[in-house]
Image: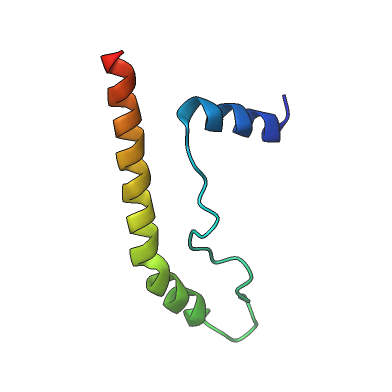
Length: 72
């Protein structure tokens, strides 16, 4: 089974909605010689509240789904 197929099966089983607007650090240039990559840390810290909120929402949705399955 390919990774994509496993992902789609798991996503359907858990009914997880993937949010295309989630925070991401892709595309940030790092590892330049002579730099400390502090920009990466700065951007990550700016995105942290959004990432924590998305994680809490996902956890709440998963718990609700699990509770609903137990009740059936």
